[in-house]
Image (cartoon, rainbow, N blue to C red; front, side, top):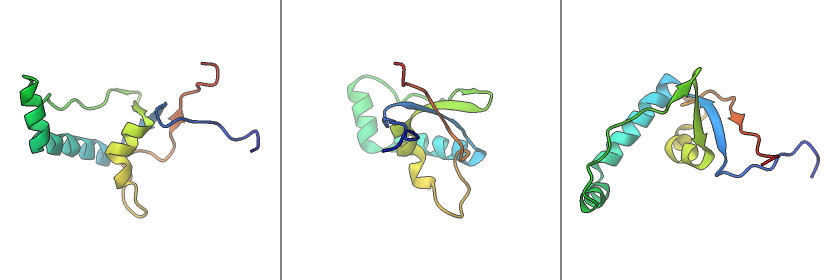
Length: 98
């Protein structure tokens, strides 16, 4: 491999700029999860109610995600010709010195 390749683990963090489409999809994803029967039963067995929806914290329009979680929640909506859930340029956290 050449020097321009950077090793990145999908458990590492990225920063993305969510679009209005992405914010709407995240809210819908949470709503569906709340109503999923198995999820509700699990929460009840733990003595907890489903937490209310909390949108991702944004700093100057950027929100921090673990890459695998971003793919889990929004990856299925990355399709050619459709509105993107987040801007196509993302920031990778530099972990080379960690």
